[in-house]
Length: 331
Image 1 (tube, rainbow, N blue to C red):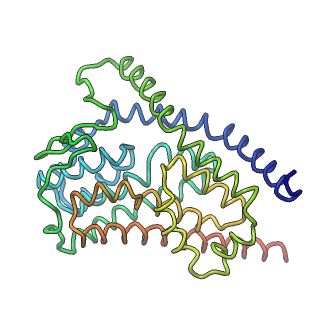
Image 2: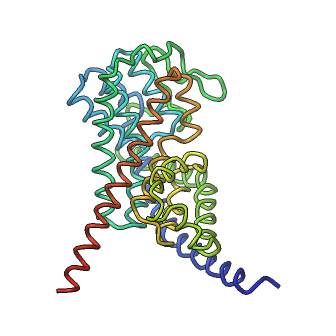
Image 3: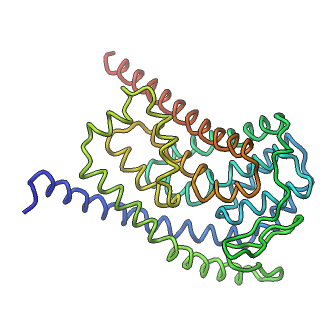
């Protein structure tokens, strides 16, 4: 027999796991279909061609926009980045694409809407998009172009996925046909969506299991001690903690939802999401092939800084909102 407290906690965890499954699985399938459509109409090589002729400024906005609507995995994002740099695109412009790509995409948007509502999602998109544009502009002015290695990027099978401007989509496993009807695009997107869902389902389930255990078993006072408002370092710690526990964005968001359910401030939770999505270990391993150490540190520091800024702003807005609500209650 399990102790009464643990038994009730596990029952609570199971109920919360079922809640996450019912909520997230349909959203994730829909998001996967949008990912497939994006890959059909905006494959990596087309994104690369669109960005080559842009200069800094308006080009950073375009790069962040394309990074946001093209949810490539790291093995495609980094080759596109390499192709841009090797084709002579400004470093700052390429960085705006790199920063926006993991932080703003269809999966993040739909799951955030389901978990936290439209208002939080809109603020998250606006803040991370602006941060990607500004971050790219700042990095472009630091004179770090010599920190880019002159190498070819290869995947785990040692096949070249980025050459002197060309790319290969290693996530889709092939190239997208150039002449297809809209119906063929939709059918292909549906097929890719199902394959993507099946491949990613284990990570989604893992994230939901961890989130459910946090919700039902981990004591609230422990979470509040580490990530609560009484700890002035809660937001930076959350941004840093995301990287080592990252499995995929779909796996992180159920954990984030559970932290929010346990009373952790929404800003701290989003700092955890930003840090994990941008400074994930797989992403850093690929970028290490392209960036010298100083530029790699600059990238990681920028992502953590974005996570901290997003977290602090969200928590500040929430604090102000709560104060206004209390003042209104008194009157």
